[in-house]
Length: 175
Image (cartoon, rainbow, N blue to C red; front, side):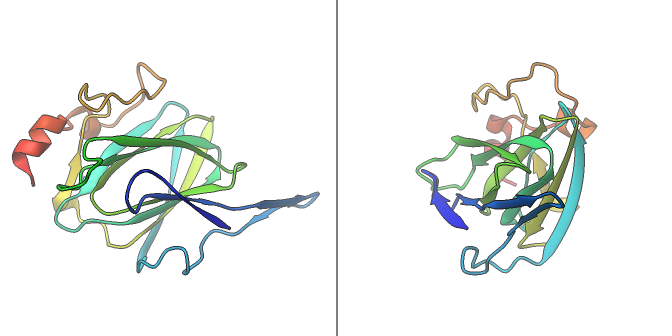
Protein backbone atom coordinates (compact mmCIF):
# COMPACT_ATOMS: atom_id res chain seq x y z
CA UNK A 1 0.00 0.00 0.00
CA UNK A 2 1.15 3.50 -0.76
CA UNK A 3 -0.19 6.80 0.62
CA UNK A 4 -0.30 9.61 -1.96
CA UNK A 5 -0.79 13.20 -0.81
CA UNK A 6 -2.94 15.69 -2.73
CA UNK A 7 -2.84 19.49 -2.78
CA UNK A 8 -5.64 19.40 -0.19
CA UNK A 9 -4.57 19.18 3.45
CA UNK A 10 -5.46 15.76 4.94
CA UNK A 11 -7.12 14.48 1.73
CA UNK A 12 -5.14 11.57 0.32
CA UNK A 13 -5.22 8.57 -1.99
CA UNK A 14 -4.25 5.08 -0.90
CA UNK A 15 -2.93 3.02 -3.77
CA UNK A 16 -2.97 -0.75 -3.31
CA UNK A 17 -1.98 -3.66 -5.46
CA UNK A 18 -4.62 -6.05 -6.67
CA UNK A 19 -3.37 -9.64 -6.67
CA UNK A 20 -5.15 -11.65 -9.36
CA UNK A 21 -5.08 -15.28 -10.36
CA UNK A 22 -7.44 -17.77 -12.01
CA UNK A 23 -9.59 -17.90 -8.82
CA UNK A 24 -10.23 -14.14 -8.57
CA UNK A 25 -8.42 -11.34 -6.75
CA UNK A 26 -7.21 -10.11 -3.36
CA UNK A 27 -6.70 -6.49 -2.31
CA UNK A 28 -5.61 -4.86 0.94
CA UNK A 29 -8.25 -2.36 2.06
CA UNK A 30 -7.06 -0.69 5.22
CA UNK A 31 -3.99 -0.08 7.37
CA UNK A 32 -4.25 1.71 10.71
CA UNK A 33 -0.81 3.27 10.09
CA UNK A 34 -2.22 5.12 7.06
CA UNK A 35 -5.45 6.28 8.62
CA UNK A 36 -4.96 7.30 12.21
CA UNK A 37 -8.64 8.20 12.58
CA UNK A 38 -11.06 6.11 14.57
CA UNK A 39 -13.35 4.69 11.89
CA UNK A 40 -16.47 3.46 13.71
CA UNK A 41 -19.13 2.95 11.05
CA UNK A 42 -19.09 1.16 7.70
CA UNK A 43 -21.61 0.89 4.93
CA UNK A 44 -21.89 -0.41 1.40
CA UNK A 45 -23.83 1.28 -1.39
CA UNK A 46 -24.77 0.29 -4.90
CA UNK A 47 -25.28 2.74 -7.76
CA UNK A 48 -26.16 2.21 -11.40
CA UNK A 49 -24.46 3.99 -14.28
CA UNK A 50 -25.06 7.78 -14.26
CA UNK A 51 -26.34 7.80 -10.68
CA UNK A 52 -24.90 10.85 -8.96
CA UNK A 53 -24.93 10.95 -5.17
CA UNK A 54 -23.88 14.21 -3.58
CA UNK A 55 -22.48 16.52 -2.70
CA UNK A 56 -23.11 15.45 0.91
CA UNK A 57 -21.69 16.24 4.34
CA UNK A 58 -22.67 16.39 7.99
CA UNK A 59 -22.15 19.74 9.69
CA UNK A 60 -22.78 19.11 13.40
CA UNK A 61 -21.35 15.59 13.53
CA UNK A 62 -18.81 15.64 10.67
CA UNK A 63 -17.27 12.47 9.29
CA UNK A 64 -13.92 11.41 7.95
CA UNK A 65 -14.59 8.90 5.17
CA UNK A 66 -12.43 6.19 3.65
CA UNK A 67 -13.83 4.91 0.35
CA UNK A 68 -13.10 1.99 -1.90
CA UNK A 69 -14.86 0.45 -4.87
CA UNK A 70 -15.66 -3.24 -4.59
CA UNK A 71 -17.20 -3.49 -8.05
CA UNK A 72 -17.34 -1.12 -11.00
CA UNK A 73 -15.92 2.35 -11.46
CA UNK A 74 -16.87 5.77 -10.09
CA UNK A 75 -15.92 9.39 -10.39
CA UNK A 76 -15.30 10.50 -6.82
CA UNK A 77 -15.44 14.22 -5.99
CA UNK A 78 -14.56 15.98 -2.73
CA UNK A 79 -15.14 19.72 -2.18
CA UNK A 80 -13.21 21.51 0.55
CA UNK A 81 -15.66 23.45 2.74
CA UNK A 82 -13.41 23.84 5.78
CA UNK A 83 -13.84 27.42 6.96
CA UNK A 84 -10.20 28.62 7.03
CA UNK A 85 -8.74 26.29 4.43
CA UNK A 86 -6.46 27.62 1.68
CA UNK A 87 -8.35 25.38 -0.75
CA UNK A 88 -11.88 26.38 0.38
CA UNK A 89 -14.42 25.90 -2.43
CA UNK A 90 -11.99 23.91 -4.59
CA UNK A 91 -12.64 20.33 -5.57
CA UNK A 92 -10.65 17.14 -6.06
CA UNK A 93 -11.67 14.44 -8.56
CA UNK A 94 -10.44 10.90 -9.02
CA UNK A 95 -11.58 7.70 -10.72
CA UNK A 96 -11.81 4.83 -8.24
CA UNK A 97 -12.40 1.31 -9.51
CA UNK A 98 -12.18 -2.31 -8.51
CA UNK A 99 -9.27 -2.63 -10.94
CA UNK A 100 -7.07 0.40 -10.23
CA UNK A 101 -6.58 -0.34 -6.51
CA UNK A 102 -7.11 3.28 -5.45
CA UNK A 103 -8.97 4.35 -2.32
CA UNK A 104 -9.72 7.87 -1.10
CA UNK A 105 -9.59 9.34 2.40
CA UNK A 106 -11.90 12.37 2.68
CA UNK A 107 -11.44 14.36 5.91
CA UNK A 108 -14.14 16.13 7.92
CA UNK A 109 -15.26 19.41 6.38
CA UNK A 110 -15.45 18.17 2.79
CA UNK A 111 -18.66 17.69 0.84
CA UNK A 112 -18.48 14.41 -1.03
CA UNK A 113 -20.14 12.97 -4.12
CA UNK A 114 -19.85 10.07 -6.53
CA UNK A 115 -20.97 9.33 -10.08
CA UNK A 116 -21.45 5.71 -11.18
CA UNK A 117 -19.55 5.03 -14.40
CA UNK A 118 -20.23 1.31 -14.91
CA UNK A 119 -23.46 -0.66 -15.15
CA UNK A 120 -23.12 -1.67 -11.47
CA UNK A 121 -20.95 0.14 -8.91
CA UNK A 122 -20.54 -1.08 -5.34
CA UNK A 123 -18.76 1.14 -2.81
CA UNK A 124 -17.49 0.51 0.69
CA UNK A 125 -17.36 3.47 3.11
CA UNK A 126 -15.72 3.53 6.53
CA UNK A 127 -16.63 6.62 8.56
CA UNK A 128 -15.37 8.24 11.76
CA UNK A 129 -18.85 9.19 12.94
CA UNK A 130 -22.32 7.69 12.70
CA UNK A 131 -24.92 8.99 10.29
CA UNK A 132 -26.83 11.96 11.69
CA UNK A 133 -29.71 12.87 9.39
CA UNK A 134 -30.37 16.10 11.32
CA UNK A 135 -26.98 17.52 10.38
CA UNK A 136 -26.87 16.26 6.77
CA UNK A 137 -26.45 18.90 4.08
CA UNK A 138 -26.50 18.57 0.30
CA UNK A 139 -24.71 21.04 -1.97
CA UNK A 140 -25.81 21.25 -5.62
CA UNK A 141 -23.73 18.88 -7.72
CA UNK A 142 -23.81 21.34 -10.64
CA UNK A 143 -23.33 24.60 -8.72
CA UNK A 144 -21.72 27.15 -11.06
CA UNK A 145 -19.37 28.39 -8.34
CA UNK A 146 -17.83 24.93 -7.94
CA UNK A 147 -17.13 24.39 -11.67
CA UNK A 148 -17.11 20.58 -11.41
CA UNK A 149 -17.10 18.76 -14.74
CA UNK A 150 -18.88 15.49 -13.95
CA UNK A 151 -18.88 14.42 -17.60
CA UNK A 152 -22.66 13.88 -17.61
CA UNK A 153 -25.45 16.35 -18.43
CA UNK A 154 -28.48 14.61 -16.90
CA UNK A 155 -27.46 12.30 -14.08
CA UNK A 156 -29.91 10.24 -12.07
CA UNK A 157 -30.27 12.06 -8.73
CA UNK A 158 -32.42 11.79 -5.62
CA UNK A 159 -35.08 14.25 -4.52
CA UNK A 160 -32.73 15.31 -1.70
CA UNK A 161 -30.07 16.23 -4.25
CA UNK A 162 -32.54 18.03 -6.52
CA UNK A 163 -33.39 20.24 -3.50
CA UNK A 164 -29.73 20.79 -2.52
CA UNK A 165 -28.33 24.14 -1.45
CA UNK A 166 -26.18 26.30 -3.66
CA UNK A 167 -22.69 26.96 -2.33
CA UNK A 168 -23.71 30.57 -1.60
CA UNK A 169 -26.77 29.43 0.37
CA UNK A 170 -24.62 26.98 2.32
CA UNK A 171 -22.14 29.76 3.15
CA UNK A 172 -24.99 32.03 4.31
CA UNK A 173 -26.57 29.35 6.47
CA UNK A 174 -23.30 27.93 7.89
CA UNK A 175 -25.33 25.15 9.48
